[in-house]
Amino acid sequence: MGEIAKTYSGGTPSISNKKFYINGHIPFIKSGEIGSTRTEQKINYDGLNNSSARLIETGTLLYALYGATSGKAAISPIDGAINQAVLAIIPQNNVNRFIYEWLNKNKSRITGKYLQGGQGNLSAKIIKQINIYITSKNEELKISNILRIVNKIISLQQRKLKLLKAIKFYLLNQFLLNNNKWPKKKFGNLVNINRGLTYHPFDVVNSDGIRVLRSSNIKDSRISFNKDDVFVRTSIVKEKYQLKKNDILVTAANGSSNLIGKHALMTKNIPNQVGGFMFSIETNEPYFIFACLESNWFKKLIHKSTTGGNGALGNLKGKDIKNAWIHIPEREIRERIGELEKNIDNFIDYNQKIVNKLIKFKQFLLQNMFI
Image (cartoon, rainbow, N blue to C red; front, side):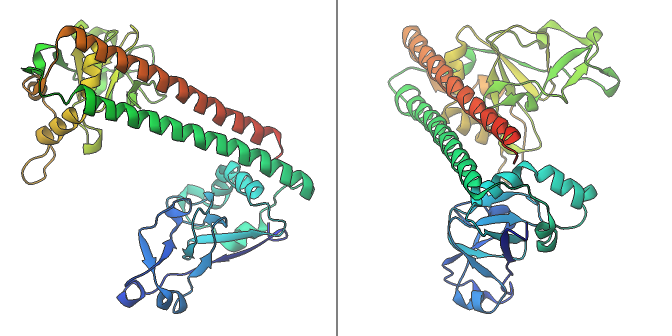
């Protein structure tokens, strides 16, 4: 690497000298912020001139030497200054994209070799000694351009996906579930809520048992199966703890407050048991109820039910959900809302699949373009 690129790292202005940070206008980029458009801190020219901090420009290839993101490469989207945990890499032939992709593709190999057991740090010396396989300048530019185009398409598709989710949230709150003209009823009039199965460590078996659905099985409002899922012996399985098609799985308690209330709709019948820190919601109107859970109404209910006056974290109780008041329209409007929820979610799923295929396509390119 040292034969094809120049490198330098920065430093940190004295934390105890606040004048280096007052009215700071230079983004101070740490190892966890190398690909971000914002930084936690900014420094001024006094801080820059009285420390080893170094300036970098937008488009500079940055590499995290240590910290939680050690081994990550990013092309900086902003001008700023870097500290000692960040390495700036300046290729001679201006092939940032090529080296960026190569470093990220080989991240596990590099960190596995030099950070065994999570100990030690990477350094400029180590990075400069890494052997990187390169081709002609013309070939490198072609590869860089192809990957740049693929990354741009992925980025645009991800932005589209984010926009679709924002539109859905807006519709649910502004047009669907914020109508005070509808009669106010308790949410329990439309649902039945059951707490999940409590099991003991000796009930856990291998994958020949029945899968327990936990908070980790909910990803992006979808049911997801994982390699580390828990299975229990069939003798303790009960029908009332099974999540059936069109039931909704909800996280009732979790060590992280951000995960409480996380929910997903079950779209098919498969053997399972709802875990003890979860709820199952049964309803004849799954998509309307799911729309309610996606709204600000449910967010406010979660906050009210799980946060005490002193900020202590509690559990989301089934009775709190059933006794919560909500404006509910007549059946025909509920069906329309549910159909809209279903159609938007299907469109979001379709676009998510496109993103996943594009990412796999990029991985294929990386594996077959000798980088």
